Image (cartoon, rainbow, N blue to C red; front, side, top):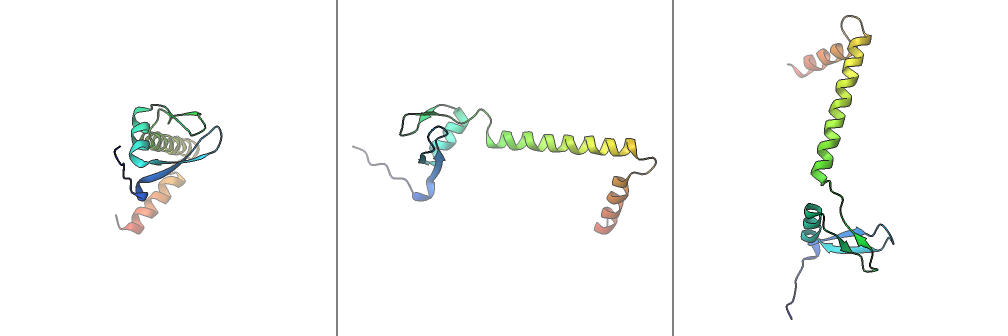
Length: 100
């Protein structure tokens, strides 16, 4: 029998979505399952998996949505404000404050 050694720092908690049992898994195992999206089981036999979107993918999607919201708000401000918009004035003040 081969001994498997794992550092305690390399163990991460995962909770089963079905029965709420806390499972401690090696970080490398979690990383692999997040990349390949293969299933695994909790000790009570419930099938588990990580969704198709990785953390980096989720963060990228959230950043793009945030940028889109900002652009939409900026466009609305420019349409609703005659002449120089409040945003442009605040931006100019910020740039002056930063010395740019």
